[in-house]
Image 1: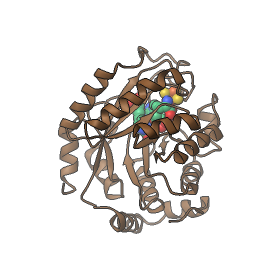
Image 2: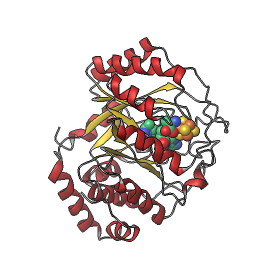
Image 3: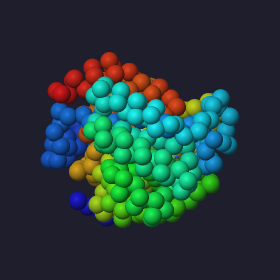
Image 4: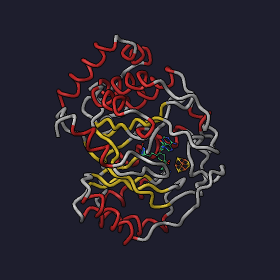
Length: 308
Ligand code: SAM
Ligand code: DTB
Ligand code: SF4
């Protein structure tokens, strides 16, 4: 496992002739994973909208008017009902997201109860709640949380263009707290926010510096949301996106690489190429947090091509 990738090395990988790149990505995948298996995670938005951060891509920021109705934290019984349905539909991991800048101590008991309840249903648990203190990360670990999602989103140079209410270093602090508490890390980014190839390479370099690498690396393709600052960003080219997936697979051979948001706007063929390029996980269910996701008939048809 390498932790000292440079920007230029990552850019050179990404620029290899497509057949060589895909072959190297398949080799990396097959060295550590079953290439026929696509891991399935299900998302639930447990607290929608009204967020105090100004992430330029997000429908849930209080800084933008997207028509989204903000909600309070979802009651435990509703979360457990949704988790039971997700399990019945074949999800393996249940990821609960809250539109918070950070976890408030007053909400922590409710979150702990959700982790315990979802785990008792036999699902892996994942939470994404914004910033966490050291103590909060330990409390979640004690409750049995398997994964914490906290994305770096892009490289450090482009980051302030996308978000100005928090810094890259604050993001890294939470990631360190989660890691110290012994919770597995889910950390990746978004492509198609107007960033340069260099910024994408820098994101990969930052993630690679973490030792161990994040166990899960979600690669999102921007879902442009009317009313947000990035509503009109130029979409990333499909094959370029495939190249970045392959690059991530080669740099993070042991990690789960998730083809995360953005599948709704991709053809089945483009999604299949992303899986051939080494992605081995998707979100199932017809909703992400606030936007649609392909339904499970489509998801199963895609996964069936890969042998499971
Ligand atoms: N508030 C928490 C946080 O920011 O960490 C958790 C929820 S936040 C919505 C989780 C992640 O979803 C973001 O870090 C971002 O990578 C991704 N995301 C949000 N909106 C998106 C969009 N429109 N397109 C693609 N990815 C998006
Ligand atoms: C991640 O990297 N992508 C997920 C999950 N982690 C929390 C979120 C995608 C959100 C897409 C836009 C929306 O539905 O609001
Ligand atoms: Fe808030 Fe997370 Fe959306 Fe940023 S991405 S505005 S922190 S919910």
